[in-house]
Each structure stands twice: as C-alpha cells, then as structure tokens.
Image (cartoon, rainbow, N blue to C red):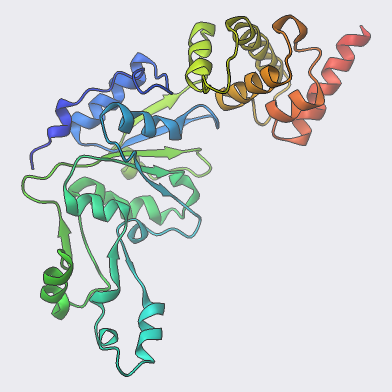
Length: 313
C-alpha cells in the first residue's frame, strides 16, 4: 500500500517539549520510511515514552499517539480488538435483547486494530512491551509485518453482518490506499525479547545526554513559561550540580540514577523554594532534594553515607 508517511521528516527538536539527538531522529525517519516498528530502550526517565509524543506532535498528528500500556496480563489481541463477553452474557438475560444471539455487536477494535483498519497516518505507542509474557511480542510479529489480522472470536457466519454494521469483518486489513501507522515500542529490558521480534524492529538506545547545553535546553522546553519563570543562571547551576550527583550515584552503583524527568522536577522545586544556583551543591542536598532526585531508599542511604564520609575527611 502507499506510504505517504515516508514523506514526513522528524527533526527531533521542533515539538516544543522534546530534544532528540540527530542519531535518534535519523533512526525514527528510517523506521517511518521502511514501515518498521521502532524499538526504543534506555534508562527510566530518559524520554522513551515522550519520544512517541514528540514524533506525533512534530508530524502534525493533533490527537497525539495512540497509547497502549502493556501489562503482565496483556495479549496481542488486546491491542487489536475486544470481545465483551460479559456484556453479552448480561444482555442474554433479557428476552427482548436480540443482540445477544450474535457475537459481532460485542466486538470493538482497540487502538492498534483501529489504526490498521482506518489506514490513516498516526503514531501508535506500545509502552513497556517487556512487561508482558514472552508470547506477546511473538504474537505481535505477523501483525506488525503485514498490518492485518483476524478477529478469532468472530464466527465466520457473522462476517458479512459485522462488515455491514461496523465497517470491518473477520479479517481486518488497511484500505488499498491506506497508510501504515508509525509504531514505537518501548522496553526497559525487564525480560529478554525474542530474536525474531528484534529482527523485525529498528532499534534506538536513548542515553542520558552528557552535553550540559542539551540538558539546559531540555529543561527549558519542559518548563511552563507562564508558571515557571526560571532564570538561566538557576537552570545552568542545577544542570551542573545534577551531573555531579549522577556521577556520584554511578560510583555508588545506585539502582536508579536520576534522569531528565528528575532534573526538570528538581529545577522546578529549586525555583519554587527561591533558592539560588550558588546555594546548591551535591554535598548539601536537602531531604526534599533527595526525595525528588532519588526513587529508592537504599540509593538515598548510600548517597547520604558517601556525603557524610566526605564531610568527615
């Protein structure tokens, strides 16, 4: 089918709230042109989910991405369609309800299934694919390859009725002149993903930016100018100290290093507390600072112990 989305280009810095590296932007554009799903990995808080929102924003999809949050119980068909068996059972208790004699009235398309059936350009975000059972990505393979699927719960003898009533039948595929959705999949690598699945995806690794200028730009783009009138001096000072905190955390083998989301929150807190950049340092983090920057008790304790040891020397 034609793929008009291949004409669109993602620059990575035009969304107004996100900054992607030139390498990440290039991989996004390759995924769009090839019609391949993009698998995005990286430490928590570094913008994996926000990337999909930035792509949707920059390419002009006003409704944003269709977000599918994966759970441990998720099955591939949950992304495609839903059969409301419970409502059918309830309706069957009413002798006047004739719908319950059929299955198709209780079939609805879910976000990915709807995107395929509509054949319109959009971004589909499948968030944290590694939370599901190992069968989940395997079952998703053919769908992402062909962008078509079967509604297994719909009896064959109801195909025509469903197509006439709802606009889709047992076999759902995109219109001839339709456009493939842009599929972005995030993973925290809680489980090893199957190799066949990985082979069908393009891959992007989001690393924490080491360039302080990029970090300062990320902070500015994520602050609400009407509410957070933060000075450039405070942003620069916070970024400098934040990088030192991260470096210390890496030395301490912290389980969860603070990332860009924690940095933005910290700058807001410093601004609200009317603190100056020169009043903040890695050695003088308050309990509030630590609560914003660190997520685990053991990480906080390690950091406090290290700071106390250095103060005693």
